[in-house]
Image (cartoon, rainbow, N blue to C red; front, side, top):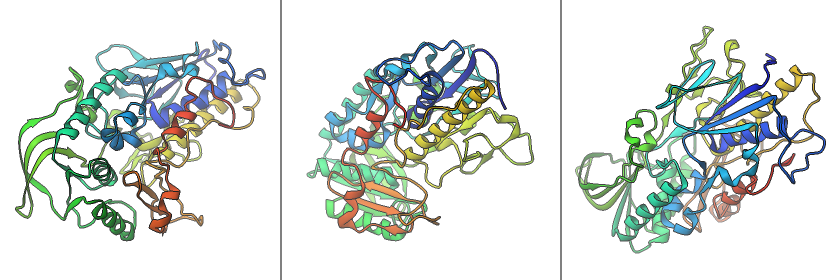
Length: 445
């Protein structure tokens, strides 16, 4: 599917792990692929290529560390990295459009509150998934983010009792961070199932998670649903004016409540000064308007159907469109490492297609990547340590500063070894290094 338009128009819909890794791969494959590029300065101008990154945020957000950011102010300030801190993104062939995406078609991306369309010859869809704020960040600028986080942190500091509703990976990590940093507070996890952390994991992992939470002093209420909720006050740290887009972006909805009375399915009443809702995620696939041209659906229950070798949409009509990360149907567990690797593969595939159409040589050795294997502390889906396929996913739960619970495929790692498998800073250092902050990407990094 070679395209010879001049300039070639490439759009990347969404930033973060998938989108930025695609941008970095495109930068190295199409802009920095000359023999004189050594990573010490900006790649030379290339009028034959135009790459547009579309993101409602003005920077990268390290979502993996968000629960810890709520309890540790100094750490939280490192989680948002402006695009302006990445000099390679300031290349003359790269444009960053700060806008909400309202619709993706076979030929263009539509922007909310604008008649402008971003037309493309190639597209990488890296929309991710949505969570309600504060885990799903409502802010669109670093300044808004810092203001909101400070308010959350003050509310946590002043509360004596905190309830987290929802015992998936995020909810369990949040209660662990809360109890680790505020051991004197009454922290309770309410979850509708008998064990936490749903998904393709062993009960052995779930039971060990419960053991660690109890050891930390977290109260747990399993097999209970919240059926009634009364509150005298609901926090709203969302930026002013963003509520009109909540149908598109659930992260703009702030679900934190203060001074709440919860009634569970067993009739138990729970009083809380602060309540965090961690009840799951919502797909952004409805923004993608791509009718199937075959008898196979474009969308599956786990995401857009793709060719995992190239990340192209698995439909002959859309060989110019790629989907990576949470929006794609590639992995059992939707995590950062798969998004990063998928973005790299998509960028490499587009670069190779363009170079082939122009009769150019292949890229110099190596590709960029922003970390393969990911999730919080390296959470990921796929294979176990011994290789081979597994009926289970893999996950690394970081439960406060000193505890972790890890499953790698079929194997649950012994507790005394689990911390050796996770990153103490929840991979923040690795992510920021791979973003080439204050520098330029090089091949093989």
